[in-house]
Length: 143
Image (tube, rainbow, N blue to C red; front, side):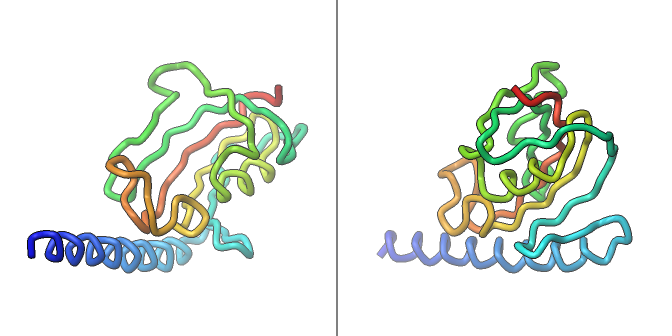
């Protein structure tokens, strides 16, 4: 019986995450400076710089602050003052799309819907199921 109750709770949590995420994205899109792509990725340009843009096969150096909607920090390279070097094609779908929109030196804020991130599964304890994620990213260089 305890197993059944636990499953019910986690399904409820996933459902609550989906509902609160959808509500957040709907309200966020009402802000004048927030744009949305056809896939549902939301973004705000914080700093736009002219320069080269990466493609999905590039490796890039980025500064990023990744958060859950409740403000829990998942990663913060700004604080560590050490950018990450990442292959774009190995990132979640939402970041693959977003990074290709950016030019070197630009800084964007992204809100990634669950279906463009880790979806219904989440990543265990770190990212819950159906979580919308927030990223503040500066594209430092294309490697």
